[in-house]
Length: 252
Image (cartoon, rainbow, N blue to C red):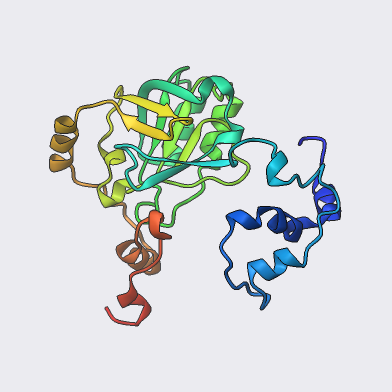
């Protein structure tokens, strides 16, 4: 809870104690310590169950994050549901589309984004960024302008743990890979339903298919040879945004 600090967490047993309480939900993989997750959990002690509560007395019936799916994100998207105001857990509004974080931030500060809008920031994924930048500036701008309880933000970029509000990231497939986020237009109705685990463009399948058939993803000018190669070889964030194996083996 808000009354507890990281020092309280450390004194209660820290991450090993948390692993012990979460053991039924975890897979037993080896860690860099030379011990498996199961071994670390088994050797831990939870010294304060008021701080690290057991599964039987959890703070909430769900985790902090939720995976959403829908026609915008058939491979998934991520939202920190515990940081979303109750009234924004379900929201439908018109899209306000931006091709970069900078463009979106300027529009938010400039008053272009209005209450009820769904801000769409695209071409910020692993391939499109390239490199999947954190959208902290745009989300901070939205909160600072008093829109955090009235607007949603969706992106194929990423967020940090500091993000608050109805901000959905990691949308996959990303715009640069031909994803549906790339064909959303200003004014399109977007429906966010976090309890229902969905994020959808409210358009029929034929309209979406027609737009995709005519769509050509934007290719940003990238001066760095390393980033150009990365953009060409990186895979979907849904599978870890890893590079193709032919690159890893040194083949072109």
